[in-house]
Image (cartoon, rainbow, N blue to C red; front, side, top):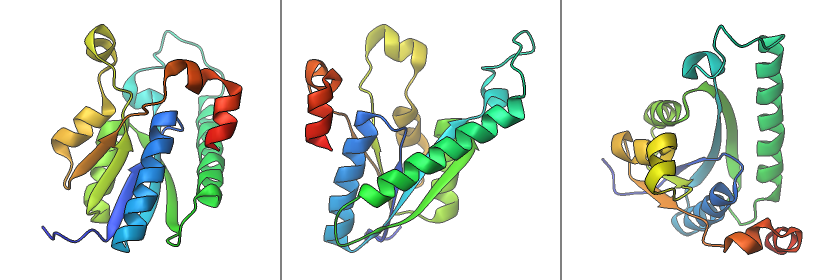
Length: 166
């Protein structure tokens, strides 16, 4: 493993946590002269079991295509809004189980660092929902830097706070 940081992967879920991770990763990329790539994983309902045979969802392939197209659009907006001398070089949308897909993508892409947000769930919520970030930290092929949004909940829910951050 090289100690240099030349390629940074930023998995995003469009939350305040991943927005903070993106800002941090952009700063790191600027300082280290690294390239930056954004990744969004659309949770494949067939793999995760979210849509079982008992549930009726009309035109599932079209719905999945809509989710992918929406994610591509949002990644494009993030790419356009990113500031700094080092541009985001690529944005990618894939389908699958988020943690597993992030790990496999990082392995295949030869990334030197993963920077991602975490929701910071604890207790029952963590036990029930698990943590994508935790799974990535445990199995990633490179170092993982996790950041959680430290904005107080009342501020992050406020429309004026959202405008101030943007």
